[in-house]
Image 1 (cartoon, rainbow, N blue to C red):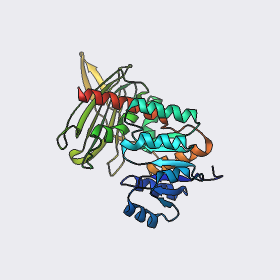
Image 2 (image 1 turned 60 degrees about the horizontal axis):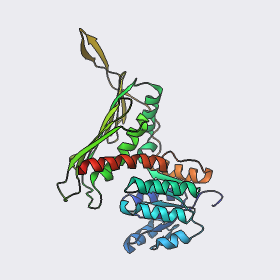
Image 3 (image 1 turned 180 degrees about the vertical axis):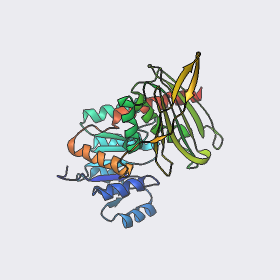
Image 4 (image 1 turned 90 degrees about the vertical axis):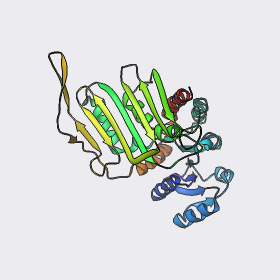
Length: 324
């Protein structure tokens, strides 16, 4: 590996891959871009002349000067591309999901461990300063005992035909819910509807139940009249709301109380309190920089393969419930 900044080869520069290219480039790490579309490669060559434009994944993997591979290809290709990169001796960053089955995900995690390679999954919310601050509130007990978590990730469009809304939208939310609770769910259920393409769900609601009694649900849809990204965490002492689409403060604390009068619960409402956090850097830049740091220091990423596998296992259980 190079002595300073690792050299990264990026595979797939579609809608999201272009954002990865921009951030790895700004961090001085973008060494190559690989895509099967000639017009896309030409565009990227203009935007990022420092990176070699390649149409062959084999050529990228054969380049010994490339330290790591970032994969932003369609989800159906993740398993094979990650496997080939690990077998070629590259560290790997892969966008969610890690694979399309828990068994395949476990094989990739084991392969990364056996080959002493870094494997990181792009669960972006764990690099958002508001989510990290929310985790701190939970860990310090500022919300009291966790009781209930729900998440809404809704929008109109970016319809997919190769993966349903559950696999496209929900991994981010499952990742945060699992991380905040710190447990494996004992029960998972999911239901939804396929309205645009047969057998490709456009809307799903998933329910999670944890050993400690915490419950949660994740509602995702690409058939919604407006964009909404909201996470609500309810505790025994306070409630927190992270609203990523808010133009103002994205993290609010509601110190509501529930008092009891004559055996009946009575809400005691309080004004929302903005929670401070450092939002000076784009979360995706933080995520990319974290990957580069892990490559250099050989440390375990915050969203490593094991974390990606936990999310994958919940996704698979939800998919099975949908099919039932």
